[in-house]
Image 1 (cartoon, rainbow, N blue to C red):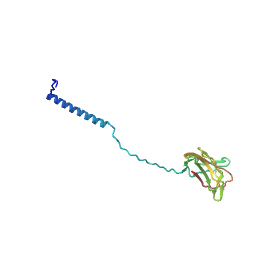
Image 2: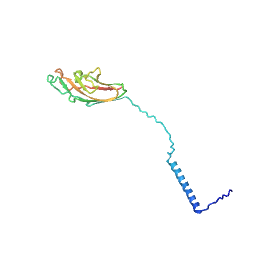
Image 3: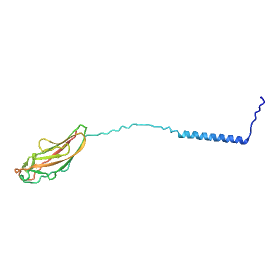
Image 4: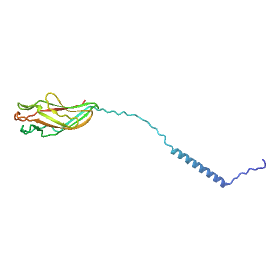
Length: 187
């Protein structure tokens, strides 16, 4: 063997240090592997499902008039040729749900003239002025519905009506009344 000898060292302290180093190395390697595995994002499992949301919106109309009756006091026709209603101004609110181009209308129609027994005052003696966007002034009528307002599309609108009675010496004494019907139409 070429004169070389191979010597085996059997130092117990050296062998113990080598074994401990090997264990430490294995423990450190195992710790590093665990840290890498735990640091990875967890593999999530998911499932999805669609939900269809439906809503039905129907045409709706709402009409609120601030007073259920109006009263005209007695007055001298020369001093007061036009008599304002005690309740003036009367608030009016309309609400409409329709298409964006839907034509919303408010009309008024009297059931007849003002009546007291056999005496009458023509319902056309009652007029109103209106405030508020889309509300219209007019004269009461017993045969043809009169426009009191018109709008396009959805929304809530507020205004007022102020009523007046054309006064005359020709009216017989009495307590007169008539019923008028307001109709809000929403297509």
